[in-house]
Length: 329
Image (cartoon, rainbow, N blue to C red; front, top):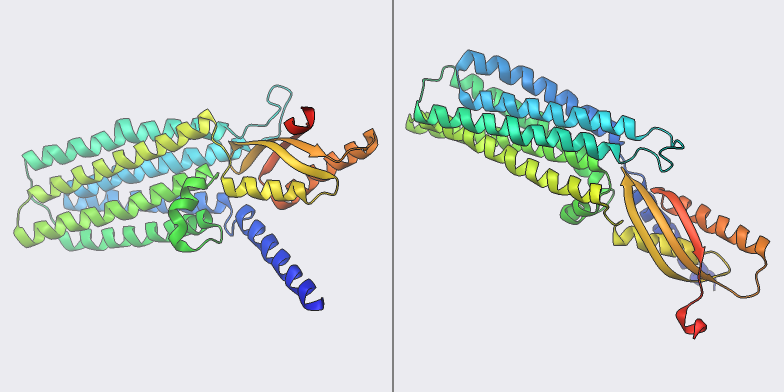
């Protein structure tokens, strides 16, 4: 019996740890976004100086990519701060969805202006090649760009995982309710990949002596920016329309409800994302017969408290009492 109780306590501890890992990421959203913005600013300054010194259109495309990252991450930070304002009479559920508006603006700027400019300059240089100077300096700066973007990317990577194994990054990214982390994750990954694209293009130029590779590298960077911006737009659209909470999170909510003595079953649950790591939860529960009004009120309060304890992203919880269809018949 003692061994059984010990195992039960161990399993309960592991469940609570899993819940904390999913609801309390190791890195705050503010740290991830601030790091990404800082990296972007350094990136733009370095790339701009090298573009002027070398005349490489790949470096000009890297400047435009860096500007797009500053715009995207900067506006994500603005949206993140504004989304944390307290609810008002006019906005009773808070301002969590304001993040989506700022993110939409920034992503459209990246797609319609900066990605298209990068591709246009690359195409022009491809058709009319020009000489490049100080190629070794370009290699050095692109390597630095790859490393600093890689570091910032690693923070977003670990925040998205929230304690899961690294091979589950695809699942974690699709289920994450942290839009600002998805944005910085994407921009930093894009920064690392565009640096690699630029390196490959200029290595080919160095080996072959063909100046057209400079223009091709810039066009590749523009295309990468466009692809990443389209992926972000899809995610932002899902959040604006109203995306459901991950099934894993809903399972934890159900578990938290059923732990309360007096709750017989969860008949229906609707949980949608209304902001960064904020959920609106609507529940229909069946409780045991014979409870008086005061007992029902206390039970509902216990349900809400336990959900918020186990799933910290549950921002607003509505609980309704319902009778199962079987009992009605």
